[in-house]
Amino acid sequence: MKVFVAGGTGFLGRALVRALIERGDRCVVLSRRPERPWSSDAVEMLRGNPTRPGPWQTALAGCDAVVNLAGSIIVDIPHRWTDERKRAIRESRIESTRCIADALRHASRPPAVFVNQSAIGYYGSHGDQQLDETTPPGGDFLAKVCIAWEEAAREAAGVTRVTVLRTAPVLGKGGGALEPMLPPFRLGIGGPWGAGTQWWSWIHLDDAVGLMLFVLERSLPGAVNVASPTPVTVNEFARTLGAVLGRPALARAPEFALRLALGEAAEAILASLRVVPRRALDAGYAFRFPVVRDALADVVRR
Image 1 (cartoon, rainbow, N blue to C red):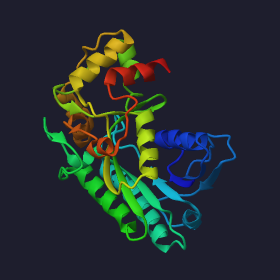
Image 2 (image 1 turned 135 degrees about the vertical axis):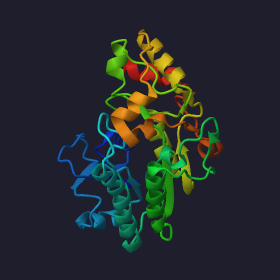
Image 3 (image 1 turned 180 degrees about the horizontal axis):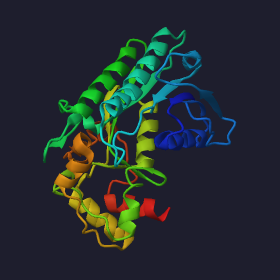
Image 4 (image 1 turned 45 degrees about the vertical axis):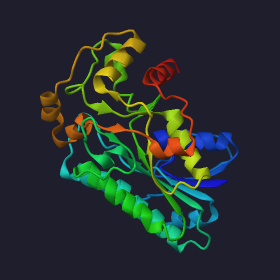
């Protein structure tokens, strides 16, 4: 299989391309960054901006599948969501998706499948309610971004199979949700945030990549939640991370302090999202790390 990957030099993209190479696939990687994280001849690098039309769009026609992982960081502590930051969050996701969808519609031989990243922020905060792919979207900023993001991907549905991946915070070494947490937790000054009773969905990097490979090979159009089948509360997550590191996890970050420091961006951290991967489970995906303690232990010892 020849796979076109937009955003392939990011945290998720590097892991996906590595997995594709290891199983014998070829990749065309679109990135604005000049570095090449892989030495393999199976990877062709394209320099370009996925949010702008360009010569890179013609490369899609020779591929069997397209994966779009492009997008700027949503919550970048300690930065607030200024108007400029919110515009960058929207543009990096929606415009890149539109450009890819447009290229697919005009391709002489469209790839068979288009896998586009989305996020569990689609659902908005729901307290203790369990959320699956049939749950309606929320109404906050991130939910509205995800709605437009997914709608842009579905513009290509007339020519190819479109799957959107509503991805939870990813736990892995060298990036993702865990990287900014580890230093304070290692020092014994980490702990829960907000009330701690809110639900926090997560996914191990290996399963995030595993699910991307899974949907590339199977007919699963529409939305697929990329999240562990066992979400946890923030209190449980903090206790577990502290236990894995052998450190106390008692230094709570109160809600008022997060709101004061981050403004509207604090909503993404304080949201309660009890997301389950119903479609992945029904389709037979077997999670490597369904339990948060095992996932954290694996990442920490790597």
